[in-house]
Image (cartoon, rainbow, N blue to C red; front, side, top):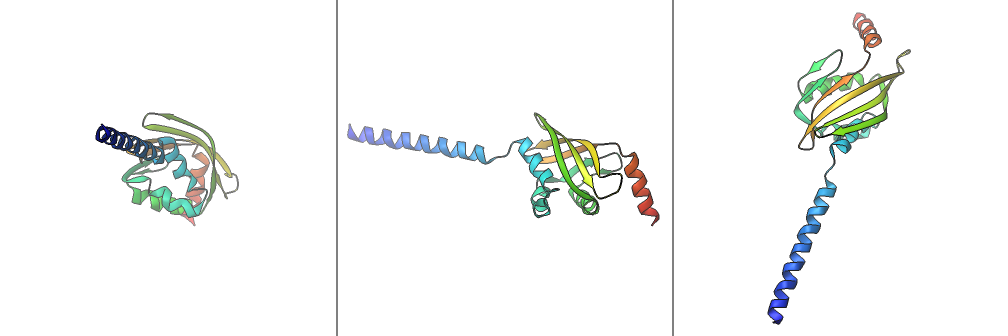
Length: 152
């Protein structure tokens, strides 16, 4: 009888331990919303930009009113240029539905007349990584700025 009780105690201990490990593992995994917010935080804190970019797959697709990119490498090149004029992001609202996360935010710049631009970005995730995003904003004034920069 004591052997049976000993085996049952070991079995129960193992089951409880496995369940606790599973719960801890699930708690350490970010939700899609948390992943996107972590990604965007890198644009407010240059020390975090490397961690942000790690959340993109190599084949990351990015579209905005002025460009369409087809890789993480292309996005990094764009982000380096944008980093010279962007001064931060202010998150206004976040919505999550399945594999999609939508964020409305103000992106701020040091360009006179374009200090604050409201935007909505739609992110699609798979396996905890961002696979694509579509950034929507009024680019009419931004086009003028980039056109004048190209003339210089």
